[in-house]
Length: 340
Image (cartoon, rainbow, N blue to C red; front, top):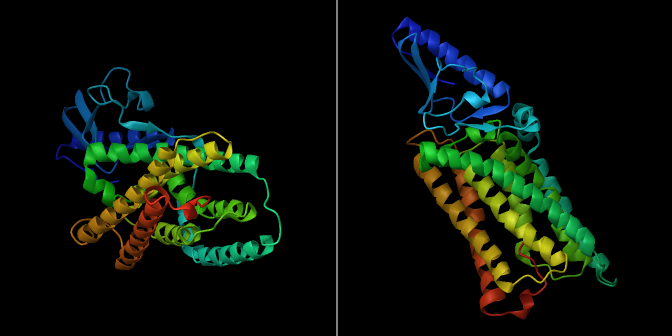
């Protein structure tokens, strides 16, 4: 947390008071947006305001206690976001240390995944397909709820940063990994790529056609997610939030299909279109990170930008081909296959 101190002694006193109030707010389960942009203005001890990222807080207002209900801008809009207990108590330092020490384990997960995928196909070759309808409903519904929750939490943080600090800051922001409202969901996103490998189990046990895009996507997104989280690089807020949003729609669609509901064909087209737009946005964000990483504080690495660009570009090509074959050309070969 950085501070801008005024020359007057009382300003220093109020600056410290403001810092303590913000700290207390965080301890109370309140996530103060951009607390690094902290300033106090005072003309006298009877008229002092704490400014948190441009939002004025009157420290002398009658009844002000520094709790959540007191953190209002002058026009009454909140500048804080309520944080759940499990989010506030999540130890992101320990999570980061674990990921830095164990991120290469993702290669072992992917190796085991490949063995089970192709070994499973061989095992099921002479066996009848299994009816896993309600297990699929439960599986897809669980992932849909998880994705919706993740999208709502990370999306709220990104929206506030976008509206208060601008687009560039959302691209270069790394506090996303440590801010109370989003730190748990950033780590959960990376870790969730392991259980999501289970999607393929339903394809194999139901003897559906397994396309290259499906297993290639699962492997590479797991590797890149762990590789990116360990360095807390810029762009993560966009990668994670968009993926949560797309998966919210995708797994909700899968849940409805598994439950036997008649889902209009355009819904499937929309889901795939969202996936393609996700890849385009991923390339745009990585391009901006590369452009800004040497101009402003936009921490990343050439290797991360390179591997991320290769991944997103390959996804864009493969999903576009899938979209064309499935919905435009009317290829029967795409039936029964899943892009993810």
